[in-house]
Amino acid sequence: NAGVTQTPKFQVLKTGQSMTLQCAQDMNHEYMSWYRQDPGMGLRLIHYSVGAGITDQGEVPNGYNVSRSTTEDFPLRLLSAAPSQTSVYFCASSLVGKDTQYFGPGTRLTVL
Amino acid sequence: AQSVTQPDIHITVSEGASLELRCNYSYGATPYLFWYVQSPGQGLQLLLKYFSGDTLVQGIKGFEAEFKRSQSSFNLRKPSVHWSDAAEYFCAVAPWSSNTGKLIFGQGTTLQVKP
Image 1 (cartoon, rainbow over the protein chains, first blue to last red):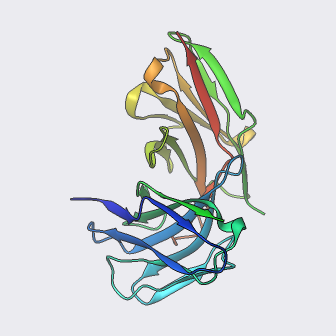
Image 2: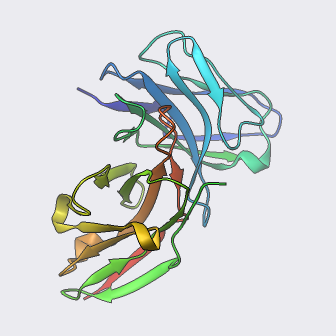
Image 3: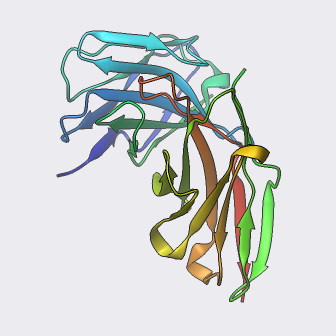
């Protein structure tokens, strides 16, 4: 199993550009989440999904969209990038909602 | 609101010394509790978790944590620190009433190990 994979590893955007961060897992997990990590703030939940076709907002959803058309994939879309979205983004998945989450390696995004 | 506090932002210990990282949570009922470790430039790896039962839980890499309901704490310990333990450590909770995969993280504690 590859576990949770994320692409790209690094990305630089200009303000106003859009892009999609990819996340995939091959463990047949129903639960998937996106977090952003900023210095001194730990990880904060952006969006999460409890299964294909079902998504909901987390703590910091503004400026981000998600969809879950398959169990395996959970892409995160930035519609119009802003410097405040400069961060490290982690995708995670779990088999049971309250159990261990498995994290991807992260995407480091810089918005100029 | 539910919250997790890690009071120590940065800790430095000598190699071979003991370690305790503090974690306090704010929640009405006993949540599911986790400790994750993040090495530089890497994702997060689970060290240990507590759901119920024995309040002293053992994890990987020689770590253990003790749940104390009266203090709303879940402190992480290791008897003898190795240089490879230098990393950032996160305490996290999943509220017991939530089966959504949502985790609430503390701010993290960076551990530096002196030779």
